Length: 419
Image 1 (spheres, one colour):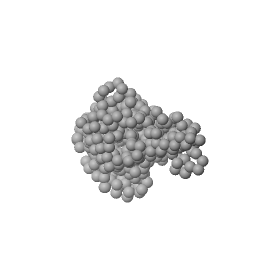
Image 2 (spheres, helix red, strand yellow):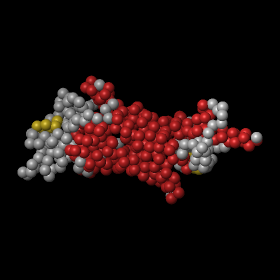
Image 3 (cartoon, helix red, strand yellow):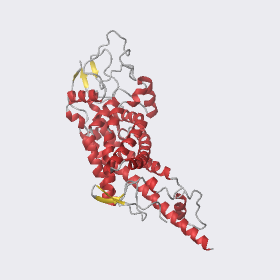
Image 4 (cartoon, rainbow, N blue to C red):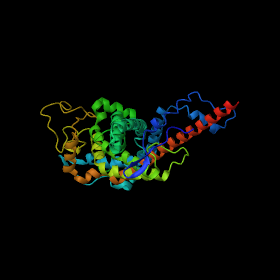
């Protein structure tokens, strides 16, 4: 007895591949019929696990595999994510005096130099700063994304005959749902990663100090309100173009290399890891290179908090204007936005995606939009590889175990019917 339907072949972009229908729907004909399945007496441990696996509802498999893949990816790539965040955020933390840059240079230079500086100043803990919210974010993000992607891909495949459009729409739908739901977690993660326990020799330091995830959430809500948790949401949603490119390309390449869509594997258990790895590599390179500037915009918006200490002509301009805004007789913090976590008035320098682009372009040039792209690619590729290989591995294992479990159940039923 085979698990699910036989994949039908179709031509996609010139290559003949198995049709990429949602694995959950593809396998829904058999699982669920063995809710009370138990292994026969004398079964080995492996055979018992295989039979018990047929009791797992299909609706649970994609979220579980997605969440596990996200956790694995977060642990592997956290240090690189910290380095990338430092490189992206530093443009807003430069020293200014009387509204002008005191230094035009940057504190962090390159992936290796940034890593050495973090290690020197903060040790191993600095490289894993923000791991808690990162794991807390990756777990629901990937569980939600891959689940919604599977469901919406099935829906759009029925409503449109265009293979690329169906997967593009599914990617955007899944990305929007997961982004809106988890944006507060990523804001906290970004702030924790961009802060430092000790100021650098040139005075560079983020304008906040959070002990942990809960402390960050409490201070952000008390000083900046609920809107702080959704800062950077607009560029994050604009960044859905990333997944709209990555996942259709991934599924296209995987079909071309292996003949199976995302989450689909042969009953024999040969998952074609080389093809999956190549599909992940190519799709991630294309998507990351095309959509990187939105990550810089999102990081700047998420890490902004205040302009500079009130009534001070010297200091660090944190996310403020080039010149001190005039209060026109109003008390600090009145009419100029909420106070920051240290009581200073909040005058964000970056307001909206278009004005943020204009500000960065005027102050730092076009290169700022690609600050840290080398580190990002170095981080994004292992992250994507870890995520997709873990996801596909777990899907393959569960698929194989359920298939073998059903074969064992069928053999047991046939044997009992003889008697």
